[in-house]
Image 1 (cartoon, rainbow, N blue to C red):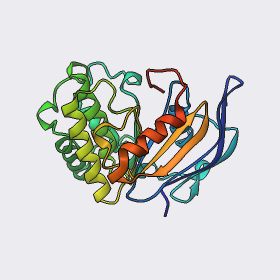
Image 2: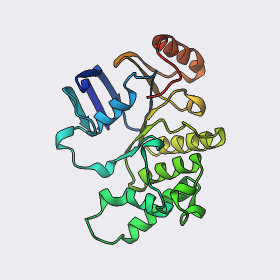
Image 3: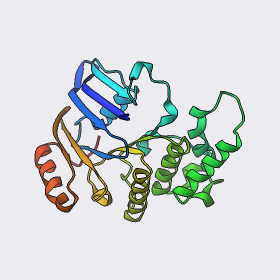
Length: 246
C-alpha cells in the first residue's frame, strides 16, 4: 500500500495561491527529496499532506485512506523545522517519549513497550547519554537528532522531515543520512524537504522540485549520474530567490 499519495493539490492561504495542482507519491521503502527555492511551497505541501494546513482542491491519501478519514497517526512521523519548536527546559527523554502519544491512551502511564521504544529511538540517534538534559541546552545538531528520535519513537512507516539539515554540521548530516538509509532498508518511507542533497545524494530514490507552487521537475534518481540529475533540477528551478528555504 502506498504510504502517501497527493493528487492535484491546491492550497491558498489568505487568498494567496501557494500550491497549484501538485501531485506526488511516496512508495514503501523509498526516500523522496522535495526541493525548491524560497516561497516554492515545499513546507506547505508537506503540512497540507498531513492535514496541518487545509487544501482547497485535490486529494490526499495516507496508506490508501483519504486524509479526512485517516486515524492511524502512529504510522506517520513528522519532524518540523527546528525553528518551529519551542520546548524550553523539557528534558530530552521527555521530548522523545512524547512521540509515543499516538500509541497510548490519554492519562495512562508509559508502558514497558513505550519506554523501550523511547530508549531505542535515543540510541538510534546516538543521544542516550543526553536523556536527562534540557532540550534547550543542546546544540542545533543535537536538537535535530532529538526531534528525529521523537518521530522514530512512534515506530512509523512514513517519516516526513522539513529541512532536517539546516544549521546542522556536516558530521551530523552524515550521521542522519546513514540513519535514513537504515530506515529505508527496513522498508520505511522517507519524504524529506532539502535545499541541497548533501550526504543524501546516493540514497535518494526520487527528487521532486517545486517553483512558485507548481511541480516543475520529478524524476527517478540515477545514482551513477546523480550530479547531472541534480543539475537538471537546479536548472528547472533557477530564477527563484536564494538562499534556498521554505
